[in-house]
Image 1 (cartoon, rainbow, N blue to C red):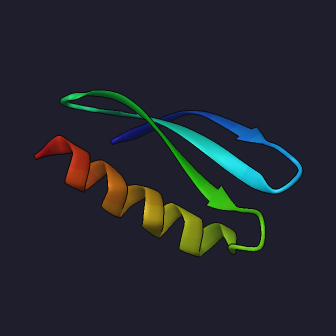
Image 2: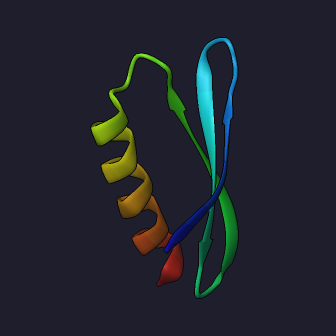
Length: 50
């Protein structure tokens, strides 16, 4: 998994993630801590890789 791009908006942060199956976008609320967001993106990428 590799994070290609991070876009911050008023209420959400979008992460563009590259996995072995392609490129996906995952959004998390801005209230989410950076550590929690990274873990959530990691789990999302693992799920999308299957």
